[in-house]
Length: 247
Image (tube, rainbow, N blue to C red; front, top):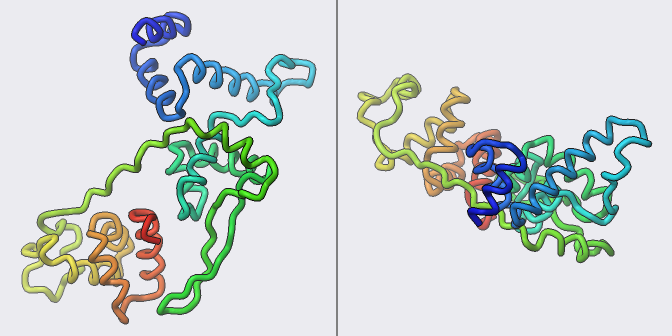
């Protein structure tokens, strides 16, 4: 492996930092380093070809049944999760950029490999329509295309850092009727803090609470009758992202 890495580094004339990025990307995609480099070069060639006349770069043409590296990552992400509601969710799961995920989803949708399905979910506040990206298993080419994504190993999502300690001072003014906001601690006071931040006037406070307060406190806040509809939507989206298996 070390000899192969040195060969890649020498052939591409790249530094150690670039080599480390290539090695990490190859590990994520489930490919050997050599194949990853060939795929990346082919995709770059195709991108250049798209900007050239038709008689230039003909050697870069690919089989119509061959998925690109990004398309394999996106297909693996969609088939591995049942809660990807947006392009941003797919991009995050596949560890690609938003634009790359959008392009891959368009291509896969056109080929009938993935689709977006709308369904209605009952909530205390009423019925809500939810759209989710899912594999189109009935497509005649689905099994053949899915086989190309079999070796893809998606990295696990980074764990959310739940805050522990004093309430950050930038939110003290939101607890104006508390005798001493600086004394509030998490997780000891998280139920009270979550309700005030999520249902308060500060969008920044609500977003901070959705990321840094525990899932149990968010669920408790969701059960409160006083929780506003916009806050419910924020909490539901947060729970879908932080604990998709429970949705």
